[in-house]
Image 1 (cartoon, helix red, strand yellow):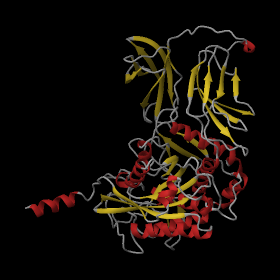
Image 2 (cartoon, one colour):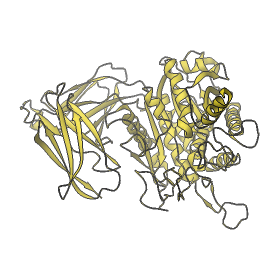
Image 3 (cartoon, rainbow, N blue to C red):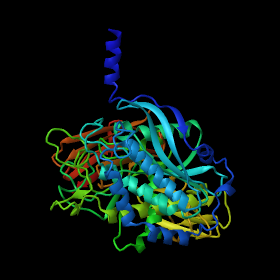
Image 4 (cartoon, rainbow, N blue to C red):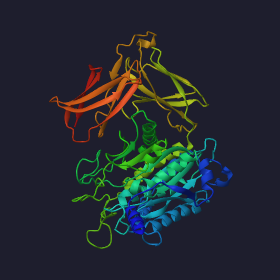
Length: 581
């Protein structure tokens, strides 16, 4: 009877996952590199360039659609990359795919003086009846260990079909997530030609489809060992351009619609979170350093939510460990990855293949993964990675709201004292960017009295590379006198529902309430009504801080004009219109 019990328990564990243990690197030097404890001279290059202009030119010319297609075809050849699939075969399953990816990283290392350090990151956890798993990684050590930080770009290598633990079905996983893996491999190939101040880590994770397990293992390892992860870029479904019938919101407009222009960045928190700040940084660097070179201009869309509705990705475990992390995803996805009866889309199915051979000649006639779209997403990632790896440290500043416009002072100035100052009213993007040079203070009258602004500052080096922007500070402008003459006026309002953002852009809206005198125990209520006066949603929120935010997930079914109202202690304080297209 006891044997039968343990047999039943073992079988039931086939789909379940348990806590990771026994973290192990197969390359013994990698843990110290991640800690910033290494001799930089061991990884110097006699030829690798460091200048921003050289790296950006090489990135633009180096990222190659043929290379991306090669990676995709090789991944497709393994039939399945399910986390629980064969680990012994050289031709099929996750084991063959892992070894191939490791060999690709080794090939890049050999090409560029063996500076790239390649390793498996191994962890124990029961996933799909397998108890040991390996992420594949390559680390390019930086030249400056003073801040001991590194930047991680990742994608999950594992794939699945309709059954999450089916280890023998066809599961080529080309959009999900061969596209992301091809991007990471291509960036490792191109970026490892050059030298950076901070270390770059390229990682392909395992077990994402069963519960973000590979990313979770490495995120916990980083936190347990107090590693300084400067930023995490998760690339998951970044090559498809065709809309499926059941794409998860915020999704594409209709079945078979195509979009090769837009890409989405998802991140946690409200508009002022550090995750949204990283997304703004990525968009800014791409638009200023790379976009003008492209014949087809990619539009970067900063989304309100951490991920698509009801979905998740490998950036989330890092956010859970208090690291700043974002997710890149195509504008259009082929399905909601929920293969129920009648499901016809490709995502999470045997149909997630590279393309269609219509005349049975063995050649793909129509590709489901666009290598030109994927190429542009490589350039988007690579531009921001380059700036993060070579940029200066983030400054601190004091925001001055003295009734004479709005100003700031840099608190830890470092020559050459060049800074970018970003102003936001409420939307995810910067409204205005100012550049100051050879000065440590700033004053503007290009603001409105009684309006709230979120302000952040980045330091610029001699090559005009920005640091990450500092944590935002905000102020409700006291007064903007004509010609800047000091004339402080009293505030007219004690609380205010700020302009809604987005109004609306994606499937969520952020409601923000400003309080002149916040306090513990103060609470408000936001109610959303349609034009007929029907109550759509009631959203309680705490008013214990100056800026208080709550998210409203409205999805994509809302149409027409809506109203939102703020009540405090039963009194109607403020009201706004919401227009849904």
